[in-house]
Structures are given as C-alpha cells and as structure tokens.
Image 1 (cartoon, rainbow, N blue to C red):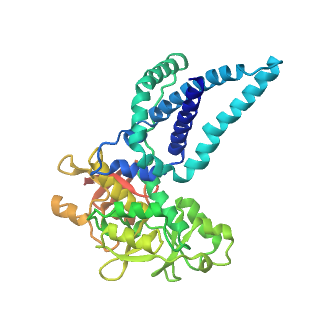
Image 2 (cartoon, rainbow, N blue to C red; image 1 turned 90 degrees about the vertical axis):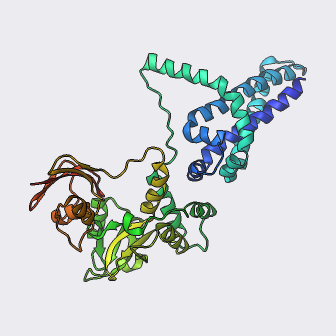
Length: 413
C-alpha cells in the first residue's frame, strides 16, 4: 500500500504543479477573451482564473502540500526498511534523493512539458481541472480567510484580489506588439489569428474611434534626430507619424525603438502606414492591419484629406469596451446642468451639440468633436482643471489624460 500511495502522490504532485505552471505561462489575452465569450457555457476553471486567481493558485498549492506530506512520510518508511549502518549518512542520502526527485516532478518536468502549451492545457482540460478545484477549494477558502484575518489583525495589511488579468490598454498593446514583431514574417502568430476571428462582430466606424488630426503628434521627414527624440519624450508615444517637408502628406511612421539602430536619416527607419476611409468598419480595419502586418492607419475623409489616425490599441479599446458595456461601462457624459451650463464628453460631435442644444459652437474643418474644438483653440491638450475661454464660451477640463480630453464643463456666457 505504501508504494501505491507514494506513486499516486507523485502523479498528483506532477498534475497540480503542471496546472500551476500552466496558469503562470498561459496567454492571459486568450484566457480573458475565452471567458468573455457570450455563447460559452459556464466554465468553473476560467471563472476562477479570471475572477479569483489567488484562490485558483492557493487551491493547487494546498493539494501540492498534501502530496508533499504523503511523499515524505511514505518514502521515509520505505527507506527505513533498507538496512543501514550510519543513520546520518542514510538520512543525507534519503533527503538528497527525495528532494531531487521532488524537484524533477514539481518544477523541472512541469515547466519543460507545460510551458509550450500552457494556454491549450487550461482551455482543453478545463473539466478535469474543475473537478480538482471543486475538491480543493472548500479546504482552501477557510485557510485564505484565516490568512487575511492574520494579515489584517497583526500587520494591518488589507489583502486584495487582483482580478485584472489584462486591461484593455494592455490588450491593445499586446496585439500591436505582436503585429510589429511579425512585420518581417510571412504569417501572424496563430493566437492572433484566433483573436482576429473573435473581433468580427462590431458595426463601429473608424471615424468614431480615431484620433482627430489636431490631436495627432508627428515629425517631418527632414527633422533631425534630436528633435524627434524630444517629441517622443514629450508625448510619451512609441510611434510618430512622419510628414513630407511641406507637412501635407503622411509618408509613414517611425517607432521609438528604431532610434536605437542609429540611422543616418529618417528614411532608413520609415515604416509604411495603411490608409483607410472614415466610414470603414473597425473590424474590417483590424483584418486589414493584421494581413498587412501594420499597427497604425491614417484616416482619409471624403475629400481625400487626412482627418485623423487610428491604432490597433484604439480598435481593441473600442471592441472590448463594448463587451464591458454589458457590465459596468460608463456612457459618454451628456448632462444639462442649467440653461447655460453643461457637463459633456469631449468626444461628442460639435454638430450634434449645436443641433440638440442650440449652442452655436464654431464649426471648422479642423475638428469634429468638442475635444477637437478645445485643442484647436489652445494649440495643446489642456491639463485637468484648466479653463479655456473661446469667444462666448468657457470650457473647464474636468477629466483629461496626456493623450486626450475626456469630460468638460461647458458654460455659455
């Protein structure tokens, strides 16, 4: 019986350690997407991984500890039946052999065998994993509660559950990097192809998610590299559009990492951009960018002029923002406080506001949105809390980032 228990304990230790390794090396992008699918059935494993990763790992660790105890107990009994003259030497040999085998079973083999297929293991073996978790979780929950109580009582530490496996921004950045890395390859990563198929459901148009031209940061083809480095540092962007010498035609874009190659001129590191019309659906643009292995597109209006730009990050934010809408996504702010005061999202179009509230805001080809109107008149993205006066209007910036204005207070004076 002792040998049977020992063998079974080693097997379970390997399985539990492999599942911990699978979680560690799994592609969090795909796990997040899989758990967001509307048509999927309830999946206990993915729910636990995405919502309570701490409980998932702790449960598997708890099972591993039980296996450790059984292995040490029964292996020691087995070794003790072997004749020996020196107990110290015997114990040294026993612990050396046992720890070496445990290292192979718990760390080496799980890492080597699981790492290349970590995501596939979790998604394909979710039913088996669910059975193990349902057995272990009831024992682990009280231990976690006790641990939390101990930390709060004696160390004043408030434990938190980190459920954000992947933010929207991180998702967009991940895909953008995948595409940038694949620009010299024949095919995109297979996981990116899967993601592409998951994004074929939206009717949002490019003009709704693009960065307006007045908000765009760019350099000229003949700018020196000191100026270009300064623009990268001031904006914090990783990519910049490059215009011709006259500044009326986009030639492509450059990536900040390309500066490390110490090029002689901008032309050496210039990357082509995709041109797309304002009314193109963003899921179609996603496919175009993926196929052409690009991560940025220039938006053209009906007259053939540049009206803005859109990146892979913008597309992902919009697509998965829509999924989050079902739970807790804030709509664009649009509140009339009194006859002359409004709280408005900066992404609302000027034409729409004029028509609905009869505001008579100035209309221009240089901007479409309220945010564009503000930036055009102050020639920069204003900081949060600042007030801009434009003729008979006073605009207070209630919420803004380095990249865009989010919410403003508009007062008609």
